[in-house]
Length: 200
Image (cartoon, one colour):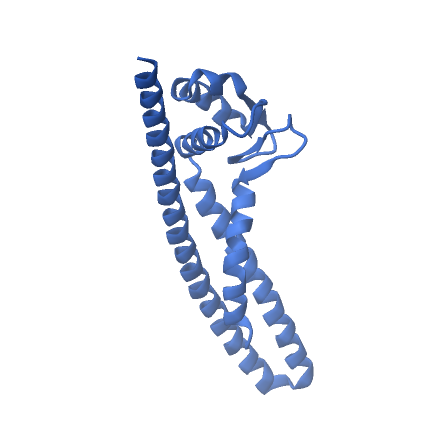
């Protein structure tokens, strides 16, 4: 009987991990799709802005000479900065929309189930106050008794979306906030965008 229970527990655990991994793959594919869309949007906007800048530069060069050439170069530098600012804003917006309360709950559940064997102390999850209130019941329903005991949901005024998670009573944490994820995605997109803008 005990052996059957162990097998049943192992089967449930395996299915839970597999389901979490499947969900993580879906989230990753969605993030890649969103990243491609962000790149396409940014490229389109960059081309439009650069086209306008080139026209402006061309008119300025015809009328003024070297002082206007310098001004035009400054304009392009400013435009590049503005394009990167737009990229950051678009990326953050897409990530923030993707981190719904439900997706955040699934992410927390997946992380906790995946790491329960390795970590024995309290797991402190900090997130937006409204999300913490909504997730309390959801997580308490979905998580097993042992994981419930170790989970501390902590509202944070500094978090707009997503979460941070700490395994050492808040001394250090992993940052899955919308801003951190947008920065992470941006670190892959910015070089491609800068390559497009390099010869302008």
